[in-house]
View 1 (cartoon, helix red, strand yellow):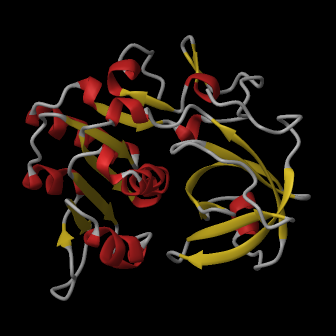
View 2 (cartoon, rainbow, N blue to C red):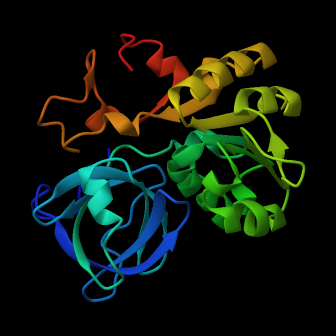
Length: 277
């Protein structure tokens, strides 16, 4: 696990929200920088940060991307803290601490073809590794990105999906929505059925999967039918991350602490744990 780079891992650093993108009606991406205009810390793809708002609370969120001087958090509105975060404006100060978690196993993916599968806000953590692959393009083979949401209006990161990523070398982007009309520019249907139709070959390929539990369940069945092994499939249990330092005792699954041993696991590793996730 990468260690938190702050002096006290429980004390947040004050940062400023420098830019806000409204991805959907209930998802916003927040760019944050230190008061000196620098990046608060340098996370590995798949790591998380604890975001706090004074007098409201704090919560663990995946870091969906980073720039030279900022971090990006894509946050879905789903509770008191996230509701309050969605009300803040550019220039407001919030707290951030981290990074936490193990991140994606990049060395295991080097030289492999990559298949990314995301659903809804589940694309947020996956996006951090997708962007890493593009930044180190020669280290990876072909890249396929399969992403789905309920409707066109619910698709996150539309500029990436329809403008940026399709321009990348040896990359295909496959987008589907649960429902749409004849003018819909992408496939209509659920992600598992769409994945089965795309029918990717399992040879020399790693899969990174994140989304709603029901999507993951049926995608795993499809992948298994195609011949993918549990060791080829990586997912993240970031929703089980709690304090980030393994002290509160609320993230354990059997003998594993998600905050310390995860949140990224292969399906082979998860199959060795109690079915509590």
